[in-house]
Length: 417
Image (tube, rainbow, N blue to C red; front, side, top):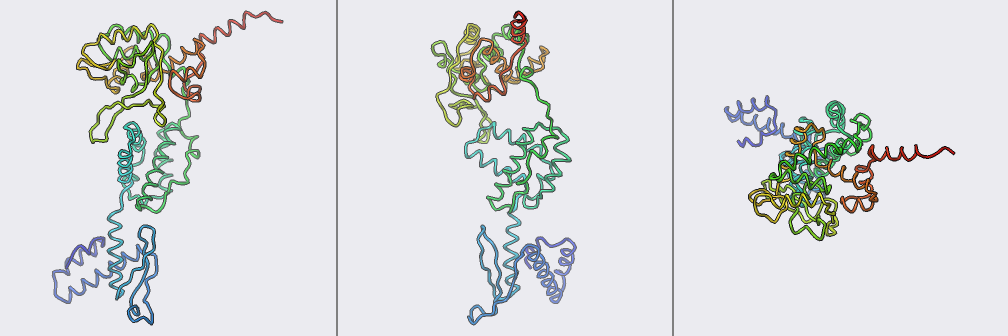
């Protein structure tokens, strides 16, 4: 007796069958009948279409049994000489389908593998991991075809929203969930996308709606002074020197790490590449990519950032860093600094100095404020910082207290009519 036919049978029935397998021929016949019944029940639970006997004048067809199945979305006729034979065919078909069904997390991993093969950068994959981490373990471990819309909504209300995610984080997590289901449908692993009609706007009001002003995302003048003083006291540390260049250029972390000495051109820094984490080979490594973040879709040769006197001083300090390298910012072995290491250094330094903001992005916002104070118009600021006018106005521009004070002073000096 081939015991693989017993797969999927209830534990109680399995126990009875195993006992009977040790009995006489008549008992074995009983076993076969029990297996046939179990397989028939299994097919009934999986096969919604009618099974019928053929009555035809064609002697080769007459008396056979027939039904339909769908393979890859295409209807296919299945026939057998007896009803039991047809049940066996259907059992094998649906059993193989069940064994190929994946959990929601397995399909997510399959989707991520596709993204890697199609050249998605490590940052995108890391963001996916971060958003997927919010998904409840019960949903992650469940077969993707069995997940319902109600289960997803229950997770949102009972688990995700109480953690007070930002609206953007909630939106991106929901987008990822929908992408996993759509990929599952594409691979015939599920029939529907139960998250299709769930909109983040239905729940946005329950997210963390508190937003920080641009001032709160930027280093203040006093904090810039503290950071500069720290960096000047640690001139042999490439991460400290990176801070000096960051505050004078507003460059992104990856752009700073990819800067080469050949990028110093006629009083400008030519910013045209970035350092990213790459995991395509199975191991995490830092690589240089020949475009900046804003020019990923349409590389246009990068941008040029003016070298201020303070920036020139920082570049001179970088020139004296221990070791020889083509990179401006490098360790004693001549290798480019790693952007992750620099970010950790900046975070530790800010905390040590009592500065609440701990990320390099605050240098970009502060540098943009300096450009505003210098009466550099919006288009020119975008040209230097490397992003769109809309992004610049929404996330980077603000009027600091000094400018407001100047405006108030001017208005106060006017004589009443």
